[in-house]
Image (cartoon, rainbow, N blue to C red; front, side, top):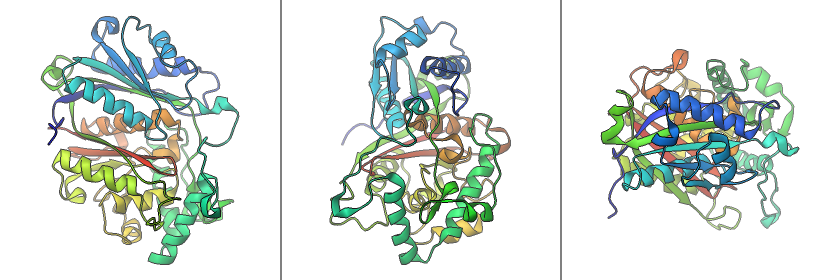
Amino acid sequence: MPESIANKVAVVGVGACQFGENWDQSREDMIVDAAYEAYADAGIENPQQQIEAVFAGAVYPREGSAEIAEALKLFGKPVSLVSDYCQTGTDAFRFGVFAVACGMYDTVLVVGFDKPKDRGVSGPSVNFDRVRGLPATPAGWFSLCAARYFDTFGAGREDLAKIAVKNHHNGTLAPKSMLKKEITVDDALNARIISWPFGLFDCAAQSDGASACVLTRANLAKNFRDDAVLVKAVSIAVAEHPQRDPDFDFLAWKPTLYAAKDAYAQAGITEPFRQLDVVQLHDCFTLTEMLTYEDLGLCKKGEAKEHVASGTFQLDGELPVNTDGGLKTFGHPTGATGVRMIYENTLQLQGRAGERQVEGASLALSHNIGGPPTTCGIAILGRD
């Protein structure tokens, strides 16, 4: 049985740049904004001396690790770069956590970034095979799962619309979100169709962004701040390609099932709905959020629509989900998203989330799925 990493590593500083269509910023500008906010948050005044290594994540890097070192002027130190679909930021965080937990370094920086708007294309570079003649675009593929889910459990477009309304509202309360626009259920239902049943407000947009956090050994955390947050678990899982998996039923994502089982075991979580206080999950489409409620064990299979209707996952509900508006309002600069979720969960656990604060939050989970999806990353942070 491997040794647990729980409670060995602390998050002592977080930062993020403004997410959006950042035409007037370079990758380096966004990295500097995020990292220096994290430095200030941790009380780090001399990063060249206090940061021993950097673990970065990006799906569309330009010059690899060199552009990170150049941006931060951190030379003569190890800078690693991870690229792993939509879970890239969570994977970079995992490498940083492991490096500190094993005793290799005392203090490291994790930074996730991407600037897809400069690529001149409107969507992600996810290539889906046309096995079984299924659609090749993410919206087309995920919409097939929505149709199957609707037919099996009696859900409909109004259930998805309520998720979009929730996340758009939460995004209006997050200073660094891209979209600050309240919408109604009718707005969502009457929006132009992207791929039925997904309308415009069911789909996350592309955006530019960067997020960062400073990690240190738990026994050194008080040297930085008194309210450091502890890493309880971090897990990555890879599953069968769903278009080639004869057991895939279009109703659940196996990567999430695998990663959740491992992360919950690391953190000692047996009843996620009762034990977790706040959750950030991967809402690339509203249907993804609905399926993930169930895949993470936050409710039983097929019961997500009842919880959506009763407000369980709203900001004032029993278990708030995507308290900052999620991918719906921040967009999805792929490498930044996982670290942005850790940024939000850290603020929530420290009582620093302002109008979107979940009172008394002490245990928080973040979740990304990537690819068709074939991968999942989960990080669990705790206050004590």
